[in-house]
Amino acid sequence: MANTNAIRPSLTVLNEENIEQVHHYSLRILSEVGVRVDSERARRLFARALGTPIADDHRVRIPCELVEWALRVAPPSVEIYDRSGAPAFRLPDRTRFGIGATTLYYQDPVTDQVTPFARHHMEAMVRLGSALPSYDAISTVGIIQDVSPEQADLVAVLEMVANTVKPLVLLISDEEAFPSALDLLGHLHGDLTTRPFILPYFNPITPLVINQGTVDKMWASIERGLPFIYSNYGMAGASAPIGPGGALALLNAELLAGLVLGQLIRQGQPMVLGCLPAYFDMKGKGSFYSPQSYVVDLACAEMMAHYHLPHCGTSGSGVGWGADFLAAGHQWMNHLLSCIGKVGLAPFVGDNLGSIAFSPAIVVLANEIIQQARLFAEGFALDDAAVGLDEIAQVGPGGSYLMSASTLKLFRTAYFRSDVLPPLTLDDWQARGYPRADAALREHTQRLLDQSRAPEDHADLIARGNVFIAACR
Image (cartoon, rainbow, N blue to C red; front, top):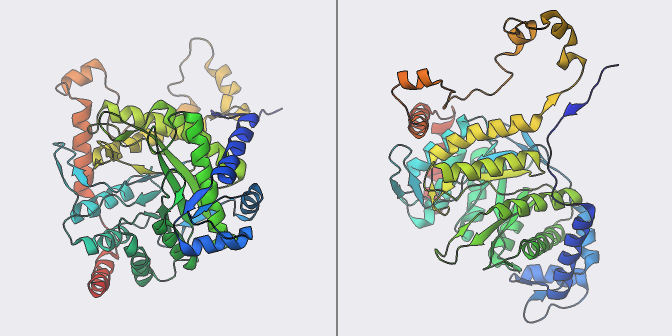
């Protein structure tokens, strides 16, 4: 009888009791502490649902019954398409990755020199992420600084939509520009609702504040029929409890509060929930990911799986001085754990130096790390065909599989081969002049940038988008 079992690596950090504990603590936070809601129309929604006025301090205490209602009516999945209307990915599914981070600076892949993020950097980075196969989406890469602040967000959106057909995760730095950004996309593309290729990304304020800007952007997205990401950013020891247990309970409570609000605005609204659990650096006064951050990220993903909700988590970026061993370690840890855990979308690959600078070399390195992490997570088949007892018998003791049927069939696809860092013997390495791995990565990244190309409709979109932006001015 054929054995159809497969070997599939997997990782679980929460047991059933842990899940119930996290949920219990989160419900207590919401019902006893509450969240501050800065939007008047959001407070009116909560007051109507609760049957009681909201206090003058704008604090809304959310009972467990309202949370359970939101969990029942929220859709369990989100379908995302590319700009051409073809299916791109579904959440939840295997882990999906994107580049981007809304950085202020660009780090040259050859020299590591850091310069203010400019419009041509956005164009080049979107094309790079579009060309690399590991990336399923393109997130807003940087904040463009060589155009007027009033136009920066719209120009960024234009460069994103004109330089890729992949789905876009949209982050807008100027909250008042968000409706105009959606109008620009509608002007260029037409219908954004039927086959959505846009995932707006919103952050409430930790701890326990649903701010006015987040509510306004949620409302604008819902009015246009768009799914969106609701993700909180907690710095343990500053905006969140320093202990991972407290941080997880608090961040999970904030996500449930956002879910309730989204469903009150429109019942059945598709939402992707997740957290970025960082630590606060008491000396440097910045933030960073630690190993415990990734455990909290995995736990959050498992909570969303328990709730039957799509998830968005960390991307392992922000740490490193360039495409160095510091950055590589965090890229490996995040992507491997994400692929064997339940992480849904990891949309922000590529930033470093405290998430201030964007490195195309990290994007290229992570492309290969993700390929290997996915290969690891796929495991392998274990059945009669996969084992091949007849071939083993044919080769026999002391034989060779070099010219066997399975080797000839599979040798091109059976294992990972790097486009950047091929395995070298000592003789190969010496014959090539003792190359350094980081130098090979830098050279390969620059070649990719030089060879990148725009979609066929690039010129038309740029021209029409520039006219729209000028009119907005």
